[in-house]
Image 1 (cartoon, rainbow, N blue to C red):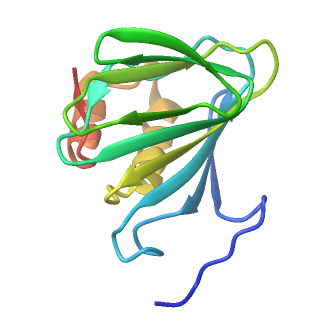
Image 2 (image 1 turned 45 degrees about the horizontal axis):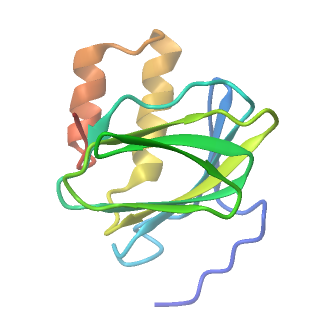
Image 3 (image 1 turned 90 degrees about the vertical axis):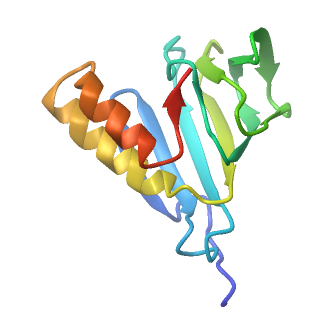
Length: 148
C-alpha cells in the first residue's frame, strides 16, 4: 500500500451547517485500518446525540478550543492537547463549547467509512433539520453507530 501524505488542506471537506468535517484519511486509503477526520466549529454548543459503536474504537484529540465530552455517563471539558479514547460499546457524545473556533481530530479504528457517513448526513440535513429520524438511524447503523 502506498504512503499517503495530506497537508492541512488535503482530504474531502463536508459542510454540515456550522460544522466543517475534513476526511483526512479513510478506509480506502488505509486498507480498512482506520478513518481520520478533523472536525471544527465555532462556539455553537452543538454536537451529536449520545451514541455508541459496537466494534469501533473512537479517539479524539482536541487541537483548538474546548469540547465537552460525555463518555460512559461522565462529563468532562477537554481543551487543546487533550485526548479522549472511547472503547467499543461505550455511550458517548461531545459538543463544541470553546469561546472561539474549536477543532479536533477523530480516529475510528477500524474504519467504518465515516467520510461516507458524513456525506450521507449532509444529504439528510439538506432535506430537513433535524434529519428524518428513521433515515438517520439507518445511516448510523450502516456505519457501526447506534443511539445510546
